[in-house]
Amino acid sequence: MSSSSEPVFLRNLAEWINEQKRLLELFKKSEEDLKKADRLMLILAARVACYHISRTIRGFESWLQNPLVIGAMPEEMVRDMWEHLWDIMLKLVEYDIKHTGDYYDYLKKAMAENKLPVLLFQTGIGKKRGREEYRIPYSL
Image 1 (tube, rainbow, N blue to C red):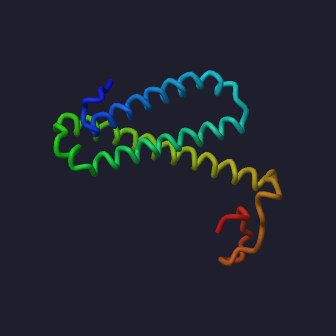
Image 2 (cartoon, one colour; image 1 turned 120 degrees about the vertical axis):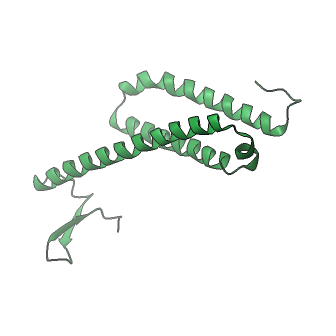
Image 3 (cartoon, rainbow, N blue to C red; image 1 turned 60 degrees about the vertical axis):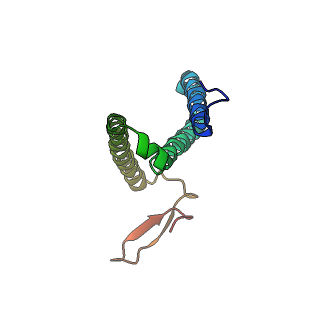
């Protein structure tokens, strides 16, 4: 995609594109194995996904702070980028609400049924209104 006669900025862009293509191919190849994966492997895969989402978003943040980029990018490209990023943001926040809500409901039910591992949760008297309080030992 790039040649040695290109400016460094363009070579860096080409390297980023090539790396992203390589990663995308690797991620797509991994999907079949992940469909059969155990819980731990799925957690690790979710962590990899979060890392690469974060890495890509940091790339966009850096991109949008670079005068060379924002000064030369045509409005049509800016609008397209904004629409895609906005859609991703909305979907991610919607999923966060759903997932966190589902997990909250699961924990509440598991607590009521005394099905939580004793090592993960501690109980104690809450400071407000004398209610019993559950908390994860390593959290505030």
